[in-house]
Length: 276
Image (cartoon, rainbow, N blue to C red):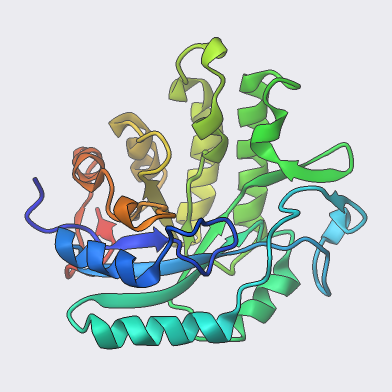
């Protein structure tokens, strides 16, 4: 067991649109304290169902079919809740944050959210891709498109996200549809997509940003994390992607062992990213 747990830089609470009644910012803090996690970042979902000013680019005429039930983040209420947690848990570093969905497509809308408050941990993520003039959940393509092609399309669009947005610091769950890999296609083989992973990692590293080791997704191999190091990546963030309190810090011991074997170590202090 790790003597010093990494910070959990990717947690969702009742302020994210896709959580259940079990979600709780205060109980997530309690869980972090119980586990000895030094810092928790509440990176609530920021997703958009309409194109706003400065959004869309070449896709501005595309129908947004994904996230039909999402709702805007109540920034004022969220920040007040963070303040209460900071008062109640003075020994836990509580960071504000957002997880910006498709920030390369919603640049204007993301910028307006970021202007509305002091967000300390900003994640960029890709959940949706354009298919037949509709923005749809990437995993919804499984069954209609060969699974290998789904992943290649996803990773290709992820490269465009990294190239097209500087709004985020940490790239979250870089192979998100892998969570839903069809069992009938056999085990997921990271090596099939090495070139695509490396292209994303190379671009992300060149911008000086950080890659997330997400413990809600199937844990990456040492080989995959080594591709990040080989392409110039210098820092790794740990994120449970918890949507319920009991998942805060989940699998961090196992994830840290993989990250360490790939050549990364705890950073300058217990709140820092792990670095090479």
